[in-house]
Length: 447
Image (cartoon, rainbow, N blue to C red; front, side):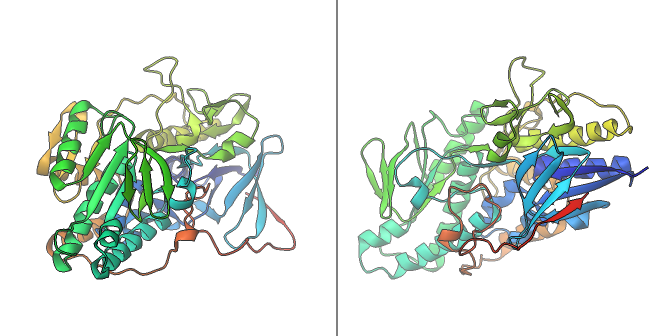
């Protein structure tokens, strides 16, 4: 008998863990294909450190082919899923089109930047969901500081050295914290005009930073940010964005050339096109991560609405912690559907959260124990090293080098502003100039 064909769409936290778990359990008894736009798994929590020059870009990535034995990688973006025909159409990295058939399908397509109908934001803001956006921001910050240094007009100097981050969740808080340290490091070697210092603003409509976390973690992060000089403004948002700055909802206009959009994420729109019930844009699944009516289809991660069995009537939140653990359950349940082991429902209680605030500072509550300062910093970095599925030694080496050597303040110019638009369903890919080149014929593959 031919081996069952398993297709996993997406290699984020959920998809990567599914592939790794399934490969280990089936041991060659199934043909596993992983469809993903890139050949790496991105460890998102380290992205702010890439933007701030702490880590080199490849440190936040893990090779898919190098760490997933017995898994076939197909480079491409899924754009159409036909549940009746059990097929997925995709577009390859050079515009070629193809189709993959499956016996089991795992949808782990993740999330994209969340947009709000605010004038000018889509045109002038940049998100922070993928490596291209982090590379762009690193270059952009460096360039603005270099231009601020040579600006003859004090107003232009202040505008270029002002950075506005919208959204005080995990990502926005860490971007502002790391960014402030980065620009402070730059001006130590190349001071700006007398009396002018880099200014970072962190805005959120919530009453506190990190509103989704414990109050003590929020208070710790808020205190560290303010002590560094970050202008934290809660219950505040952007009314309009322009090329020269942002208008706040309290009427203040902030002169700036940098608007970083970290207001949250939304499920990848791909799951909304397959004709199955949704919950706020997420694909509804049962506690076993199955799509109702399609026992051969599983979904996990940010794009799946997974019932929270500890809180009946609610769904698990869109966090990397849930996605990582759902991926393991999905891998086990797919294997069980192929006759290997028994399936299980997804249950998970939080073991705590960590927020890296740069340098030796962090906020953490492992197993409910609130920590701050250097101890929290050590716990946070230890957690990341333990959670990363590879590349640990290189990450640790970069941390050590950053502690003893000055950062390299150079802009490479590899990612341009227009290639990382805020409104994109593929933040992991830099946009190419012009439409993708398409092949004159399609090809079909059975996985």
